[in-house]
Length: 616
DNA sequence: TCTGTCAATT
Image 1 (tube, rainbow, N blue to C red):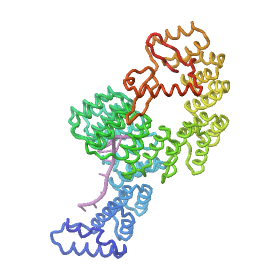
Image 2 (image 1 turned 90 degrees about the horizontal axis):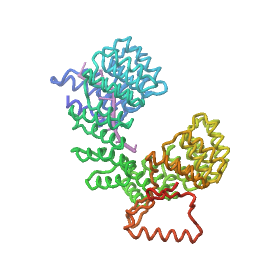
Image 3 (image 1 turned 45 degrees about the vertical axis):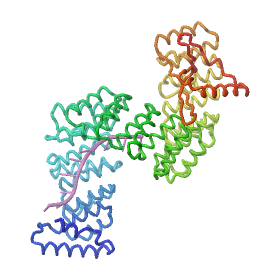
Image 4 (image 1 turned 60 degrees about the horizontal axis):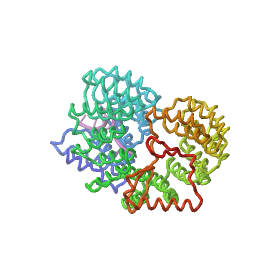
């Protein structure tokens, strides 16, 4: 057997044309077969199927097809090997045509064929359901449905993954008499991936109640479901179940629990689990670094250097997270060092990573380098263009952002909602009001993208910033959905900036109607009253705020000095021990006064109670 | 005797 496999290795025949090669092969197979008495009685067709499979394993798709075409007798197994081979090479539509060819040749599919072809249906999203239903009918007709757990599970998976057919998946599931671990996992995954985490968790619980077969897969998907709804309480329960059922040695399960703690913003739980994990791989580190990128960017950079010093090799996932951490912290030097390391490791061709670098340079104030990366990318996607446009917008280059948008459309990329937000925001910051409004109209009339609350927020900002407050007000009043607090607050800020007290009062009444619990809203309102000298109203609002025990989150600043990053808030005493920071700030303030910049004192209110300045 | 279903990181 082993000797036959060695003999059949396609590498030996590489330089010889296919047909000759295959005749040679048959000769050798028959020869071995006839001359070796101890050789198991494998048919020629079985041996050829072996070879077809090994061709697909090596990615030699054409050779597999040539060999198949030259066969005189093809049985179900050979056809099935061709279908699965094409699927493993991601050629799903070819797999489907192979299947229809098979039916045309009058070969009756078996359970192997049906489950394989269902997988192809799943991946052919557009025509999936009609193909899938056809196979479902066929499965019933030839009697594989209900008699093969593989067919039933594949059928469930097909219904769950394609279109909105969780109902059909559930029907198939309920009909299965002997459910196995895959049946349970497939159904839980179906609900969870469709965004119905509670549905997934209900099935997970049912699995325990009915004493279904447990597997690490069902645990990791259940953990994922908890993470997606941000429920640390449910996540901890699943974590306990993982320990109770002895799945702790399974690394993917533990990695997903780590991810869950990060997504539920339970930083200390994540840290503790990480320190207790005896086995760790690159994914473990990446999960923690990605988690801390949003929780505590500075910490995520520390974890990164720890990862490197412990001898783990960072990959493109790792670098994407740490580059994003640098964007959040606006630490250019650190970002540049990482960029160097990325080039050194040959990861600079990675699309997602390049997009992160574009964003990093823009957020660190270096939009020219963003453009350099963008223009040198071998291929781009929607995110690349959007990141570049956001970078331009943030630096006041509205015109360039608009030009980039037009270029993107010309290159054949279809704009989405986020791109329009980038364009509108760029127009807003550059004062290109009419240009922005034109894109807002084109969005629905030409590009067929439905504007949502966020888009309306951008347009209100665009009009408000330019002082076209009445238009902004009318836009909010005529929105196709109920305005939320933030959109009114945005207009309120514009009223204050343009010193329009009458419009301000009107907007303020709308804001008060929302019965907000956000401190920032009241700070803004109280400032408007204070600026008008309405101290009674001002006082009652401040009282209301104190009752809410809700403080506005302080605006934070960073400064990078001598390879050290200092982060501080207004009135922060923690950095004052470093005289250098205070000195630099003093110098900056003096310089600002010299060039005629005085702070807008209307914007500040002094809170006597906690002795801090609150900036709006 | 050849052919199968499910999971974790940006």
